[in-house]
Structure formats: C-alpha cells, structure tokens
Image (cartoon, rainbow, N blue to C red; front, side, top):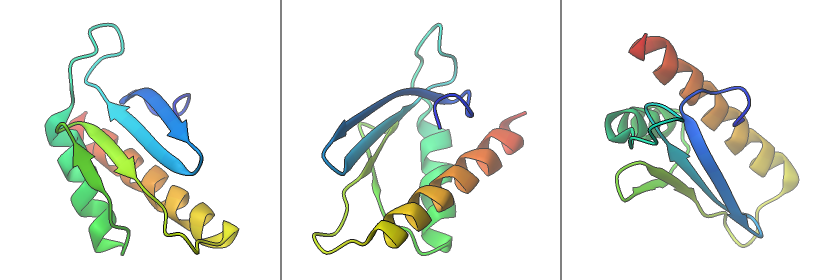
Length: 90
C-alpha cells in the first residue's frame, strides 16, 4: 500500500500487528492527523475498527482468531479508505 498511496509515510509490522504512519508529504514527514481521522471514521462505517496512535499512525491489531480472509478484507477496506481520503484532500 505504501507504493500506491502518497499519504503512507511508513509501515511497521510485528507479526500481524500493523502500524501505518500517514503523512502530508513523504519529504517533510508532516503527520497527517486529520487524514488519519478521516480514514478511521470511514473504516468504522465499513465495520473495520482500529485506532489512530499519536494522531497519525493507524494501528491495526488483529483478533487472536483472525482468518486469512478476514485479514485480507480488513486490508482491502483500509486500502479503499486511504483512496477515499486522498481523493478528498486533492
């Protein structure tokens, strides 16, 4: 997703725990707090829940019993919400 979305400044994973930092520009690394909030609420409307750590880091901790299909669906929803947020910020 980092290659597809200009707002994704960094991605970190530990096992299935995902942290994705949203930025206004990759050069400046300015945190994209409003964009992260927009993505979070858009995802909530699509039944995907996560939190925004430090205002601009999307933290997606999976359930202990998550299936591959559920994980893929969650990432698809997140991808769609990122596209929507980027389209609105142009």
